[in-house]
Length: 131
Image 1 (cartoon, rainbow, N blue to C red):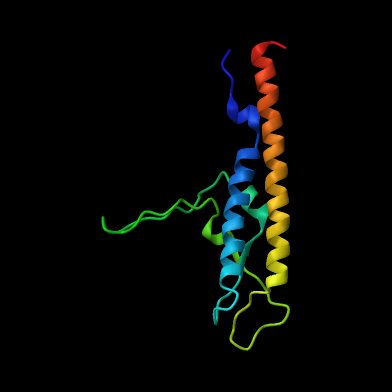
Image 2: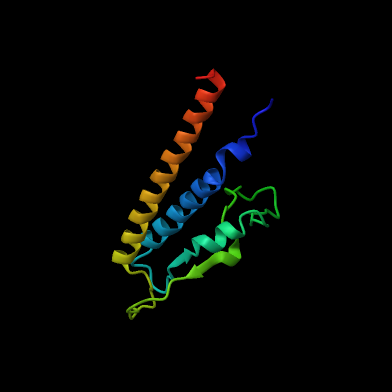
């Protein structure tokens, strides 16, 4: 009887992909903390997961000379601008303390999901061995 990895692993792989994309997004916010007029972006994780099985945005090139980019696991419609608590004079909306806290929380969630996924693989391994 074949094993359906989609059923066995559940939504954990999708969660990992979204956490990785969110890490890149938050890292971009932090990297641009001193860039004038940069607008901090984030996602509504629950909304993205609800739409995860729908249409996902992928980068398209119009010329063979364009560099290929990694496909985004986050639909463009789910990218939101962060509302600043205290906007800066140069128009930048990045609050480094908030971004660092969000990044740390996202990293913890990523690691937790990775542990759950590892546990699923251990369970499959035991089932295959018949133990």
